[in-house]
Image (cartoon, rainbow, N blue to C red; front, side, top):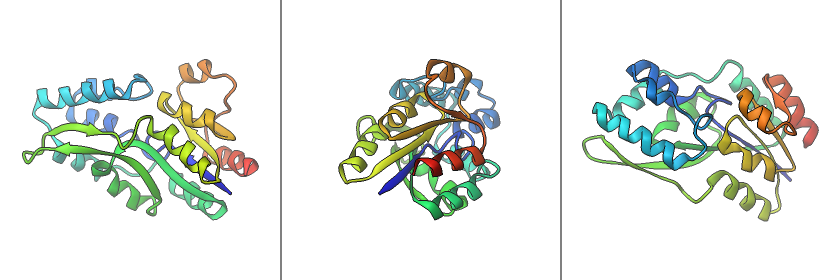
Length: 199
């Protein structure tokens, strides 16, 4: 059996932190896993910036409520789910993702969580396991699944390379140049065709 593992932000929905950076007027928060491969370092930086500006979960959730999936993402996901099982593997957080999952038709999502103070301050991020995307792919494989993976950032490379087929989707030039052996696709039609061929 096959199961497709997709990244969320940059693949199906816009980058949450970039949207929040633009609305809050804090350009430092535009940094993502495309820029910083070390996720713990990235989140420590983000939480420090939020504390500095007195911002918390409520303000981020307000922005997220107005984010829509990328054009064509819902149709792509629906078509893919007609062909095979799909799970979204993301480094985002349960507290961020729920409204976005509703807009995508409630696909299966495995992500992380936040520790939030009564004041709404985000105290820390809690990863569900070490190297969650790769660990999940390996766990699925240990259950008899063959995985196919797609993502756009540094933190997707391990799951892509561990899968029987893997694709960069709308990734940066730097990531594509550093991984010239990985197919780099730009449209949902291309990605759906490539995954279908790999099934």
